[in-house]
Length: 441
Ligand code: AMP
Image (tube, rainbow, N blue to C red; front, side, top):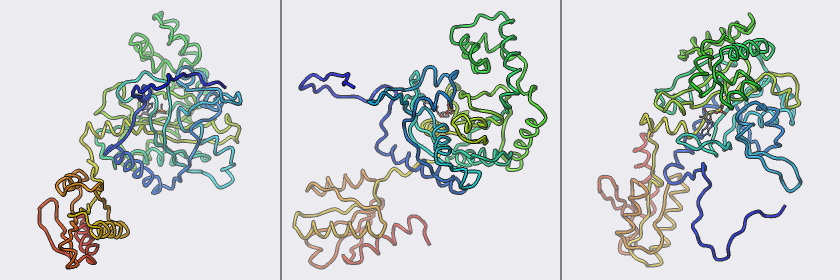
């Protein structure tokens, strides 16, 4: 395949990241890591093990799995033909890939349910706006292979617990049941007829939804169509006794765990594979158009669609960018923005000063203390400025004069208090002081 771009020789125009794609750097990057770490810690608590799935897959996985009628497949996929002529797609979501992995590696043989957690970038060619990017990040879990309302409760609770751990108080849980495809079949025709008989003017986009999957109309952006749909018959009334019993057991379980929820029978999720229990976590601190922190539900036909056995599944995906926006809006849980606890400075350019500074910094790091050096032979004033920028609590100052006596100075950068400490005792001194900072016994 020939390269399709040309670059003029000696072009030095500054390059920018593509539209809808964001760099994460500085303290923000530390915040991301902390958030992801916390998510996988919660997953660990609930017995969900990490799975790493590829960033691109055969296009067919998403066409079959996510569904041809969805906005994601119709308009938003980043698909390309590789050098071998295969059609590949950057993953727009994680569930299809996790299920493909489950099927391909026969994970059902390792015992059911398989409880898996994943995270990483997803790609959708969307209209870019605040909280809506073309490359965005999700954290998610999937529990595959067992149909038990209590497992639904566990999955919903895990996400809720994580959002609470993020300090999000303005989060709310919305739940619904959309039943099985056979329960939906009659309803879909009824809804189509209802909307057509209403005589409402339907735009091109909604007309396509009406043709491919009238249930997608429940998500319409056209207020006139939304009004018609709001007065249409409800899918929930078409569910059988078994489906309703499952749903009511899920609600009982949520109540038993003190997880507040609202039932919204109009909640339909954007991807076709959903069945039965569906849910969304929303934030009342974000604008309504982008207030979904995440969502999920059952996908009871998906394992089979991907070529595996007839097994149920349930999971959710949370949007990392949205969670961070909500945390900002709520002023929740400020993260530590420092990059070091101790900075080792040099008063003098003598070889012995440099080698002692290097040795102390290394010894501190070995002892588990985050430590840094300014480098570059800068003035002591500039080195203190560097120490400030790292947010460190202590500076160790190595100077030729003190070194002769086997000592260095340790300065508390908050109070300005200084102590003279034997070179060999620096690690013990600093670990005791930083330990006390953290409130360790
Ligand atoms: P979905 O896979 O569509 O159910 O999305 C799950 C969550 O991912 C949403 O609730 C958002 O928090 C997040 N999300 C989905 N699409 C985007 C996007 N284009 N930009 C940022 N976050 C997104």
